[in-house]
Amino acid sequence: MRILITNDDGVDAPGIAIMAEIAAALSDDVWIVAPDGNQSGAGHRFSFGRELSLDERGVRRFAVIGGSPADCVVAGMTHLLGDRPADLVLSGVNAGQNLGDIVNCSGTAAGAREGVLQGAVGIAMSQAMDYEVSHTPDWGNARRFGAEVVRAILAAHSGDDVFYNVNYPFCPQGDVSGLAAVPHQRFSRSPIRHYESDNEGKFFMAIPETPLPLDPKADYEVLRRRNAITVTPFGLQQTHFGALERLGSLALKAE
Image (cartoon, rainbow, N blue to C red; front, side, top):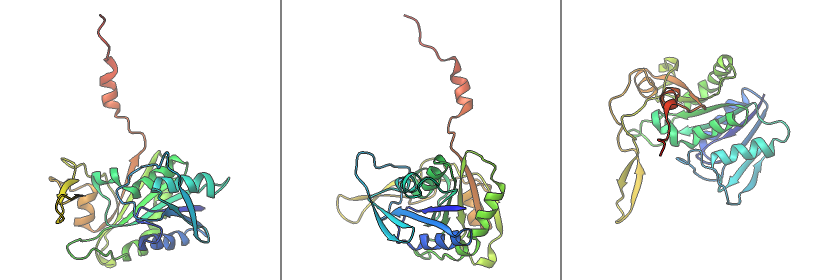
């Protein structure tokens, strides 16, 4: 199995080293193509109309200078890996959870999504943190369970038009309750808000609070309350067929 790794925290981020350990337990044909710097929140952005470059950082290890996670997957799958693109694209391990509607702007998720669009199986991984305790993740659960989670997903995969979003709980390894296949949390509104900076005239895009209510069966609460490793399949076909059917009678009024 040929594996391509990317992330949105940058090629030198600690989480990508954890992902390399996970991949090494699955294959000896592992490639890393990741942004040269932090691309968190980049979503599925492509750098159209702007020149990019590759910087070789080691054996089968490359940084895309100024590139997004999606740029990196395309550069790997259609250029660096030649006539044999990867069978599996692993994106992450992200520092911090990627849950609910936040996945829509996640560069980590976009790396896995683009992997599927390029013909591979795509899996995004994130290690949850309790930001009130520390802004430095404990990678223990991702490191301990990562390869096993990938094997379980591959065993259940059946050519579905999906990518998988995995979150590891913030808890001691002995408290992990198992794997849980769950839907993602649809928030009542976007969690992303304008957030004032201490610097006059400046502000941030931030997630100051979680919109309520929360579904106890969705990823956010299952990860937090049950200490389960959550796995959510996201479909690439985004058409809402119920709405499509309702729109079937649309017509322009004749003059």
